[in-house]
Length: 213
Ligand SMILES: O=C(O)C(=O)C[C@H](O)[C@H](O)COP(=O)(O)O
Image (cartoon, rainbow, N blue to C red; front, side, top):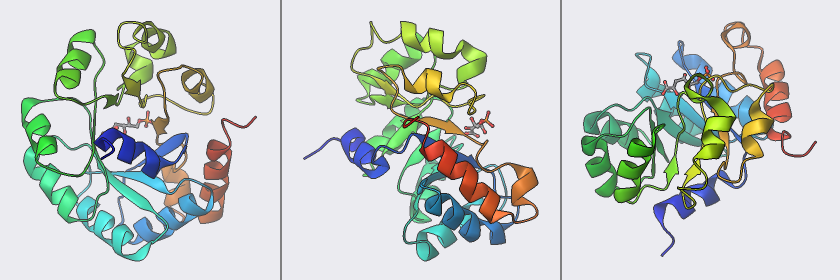
């Protein structure tokens, strides 16, 4: 039986960027998920930072077959189960807590918890969590900080998120302990608001190709 991390990584299937989405209008969720998938980024994270986030997850899970929808900004066990019930295929949290560790242990849905410091990483590791969100990546010390964590934590893989853009994504993706990065830059408000799905598809395509150039 592959570990939950292995299952999660095979779901991501080499996708280098996970779009981090804040859905202000629930009607945007489906066309946005479709545009990102068309551009090559089927795995998306819808953050529970807006009132309609769970409904957005529900709609994408039900209507966008090609999407792999996850939930972000999960802060406690209640939100974990609500997001799971809405159809989330993975759960992302900004940090790691005992409550979330227990929720993840009781669930088949993989958890990508935030961790920055060696102590947080060790706490996650002790709980069997070995794929972590390095958050907030840029603000906490960036690629050089994360690089320094590779030696003591050889088995831990990261998804740096926070301040990551096309400008610095390659610096992270070049690190041996980085699997993918997360970021909101592929779905900026100024393109989502007018429903410019073609422009978002193009941004997704550029992001999906980051590892190729
Ligand atoms: O809410 C969460 O759980 C988050 O992940 C916080 C941030 O929205 C992401 O880290 C994206 O950050 P930016 O790409 O810098 O906009």
